[in-house]
Amino acid sequence: MPCPAAPGQGDDAITVPSSNPLTRKLETFTRLSQDDRLSLDRLAGQNLRRMDARQDLIREGDKPQALNLILSGWACRYKTLEDGRRQIVSFFLPGDLCDLNIFVLRRMDHCVGTLSPATFAQIPRALIEEVVLHHPRITQALWWENLVSSAIQREWTLSLGQRDAAERLGHLFCEIFLRLGSVGLTGRTTCELPLTQTDLAEATGLSTVHVNRTLQTLRSNGLVVLKGKMLEIPDLRALMDASLFNPDYLHLQHEGSHLDANG
Image 1 (cartoon, rainbow, N blue to C red):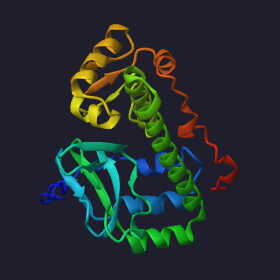
Image 2 (spheres, one colour; image 1 turned 180 degrees about the vertical axis):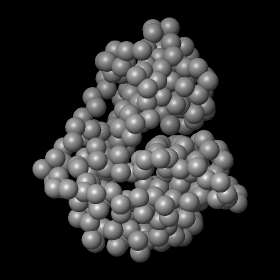
Image 3 (cartoon, helix red, strand yellow; image 1 turned 45 degrees about the vertical axis):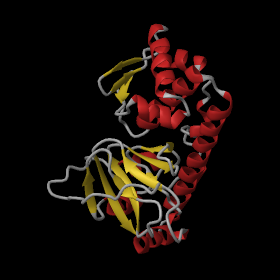
């Protein structure tokens, strides 16, 4: 079953973050120069678009024309079977580039759709190539970003194969909280979570009934509090321990410090 057609996109009165989430994300890996930051701001200002929730940015079978940078809101990468069953294979949060290597594809082999209202920049291939050519520090930081994306995919595969339901959901909540924290989008114990139980089921390989029961268990054990579209983790360490969560795969410890710029 092909992905549904993407509706029209509007760019009137678009509100963008006051700080560039891509810069904040890449500076998790290494320190960038002022010139690097200005170049990233240029990327984040390209062809701004806004979409409502539950719409496609790009569909399976499309020829990729630009690289999408999420500035606000949430999106996901997903695959759909002929009978309509869907698997979410990754979440895109503010600061995330949807498929850094997208231009090597002749046709898209997956869909990217919004999970909440989202603002994104559509960056032309030529501009990406220009920035990579003239800003080696950015290129190095993007290597780290690509490394983390691959590491996240491995952890999701491990969850599907080995973690039980409570560990899968708890692990996912820990990951989301830390990823949002790296771009300054968490409170002390809270973060946005605009996901339905169906979304969680499609991301974790569980049924919606199993997700509902597992969330009740996590709540009753005092590990999570879900209210509206907000997630509270009263004790992050306790949830990490219960979910067998090791944050090393997110590489949030400024591991590229030896690559630091001087300005």
